[in-house]
Image 1 (cartoon, rainbow, N blue to C red):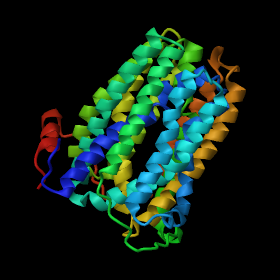
Image 2 (image 1 turned 135 degrees about the horizontal axis):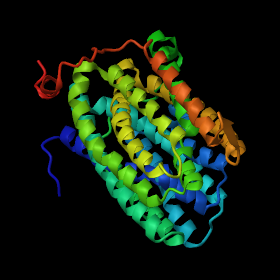
Image 3 (image 1 turned 90 degrees about the vertical axis):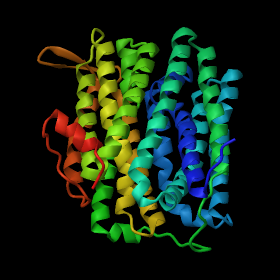
Length: 429
């Protein structure tokens, strides 16, 4: 069906379309989709935190990647086995809903199994992509990849939000889990056709001592650990708060997700041109700044302003998170030594541990605060807004920690609108 002049072009194509399918798979347990699933399966706030953070938190299992590799003759075998073991349980969600087994323990169990093998799958994929994609192609390639992934987000958000709004209950959840099932199967299929570089050594020993002794990378780990903690601490509760406390409709949540994805297409294009000039660190710092200010919308949100502020949140999320998504993975590759597996595992261990800690603390605090209110100068605020304020403070502090990381960067300046456009779009010399 498709013809390619060489293996490199084929791999780039597969990495993009696999990214689109795996994105729709992960969207099934994120954002407003997670809120819908959690309410259908009667989850308490604590279990919502657990479900949200398990895919990220169990990345810490990558510390056992060296032992895991011993079970396979090639890296591709390890990749395919991990993909099958992670994706098949997600397919079972459709049948769990079909047969009315709407107990929260089924949902937690499926996500737990998925997260275990997804951890190994992510580790293998990350180290492989670092070997496959040439350094000089990374900014343009990942910009294109994230742009097309944004299109898949638009499709997913439109279909699922329509279903949740017009056919609430079991029919809409079947549509949601049906899309997840199809995405899981396609992900396995696309990964099967990848050309994955084999182990550099037959029995590779992986240790995290080298990256921990690297002072610059340790500063990066400190930053990413606190950043992950601050995100997982409140991640599932923005939409949860909007739906349960402010009566936001799934239609507006779906529209906001679609708007974020559409705007991300343009921001990825601009950032892809800009990042080569200013560096991944500078772009990452900008993205964190924008997403930090977006939290303020939820501190100010009321039933009268929920729709407009959620749409403003969609704009800020597109501007901020597209910068973070494009730069964070590439900055990891930039700071990693040739022993990329060890650096990737140290990164995943940090993200996993701090993500789980943030989720558990956030879950316990949300259970306590969900029915509470507090008053400031006579104005009443929902208890969950206290968590948003804590997250706001932590995100600002992350920006300070990032300044200690040494990486290529060039300061931004504003020479005027027309010169700015020329500066971004002209060919690099």
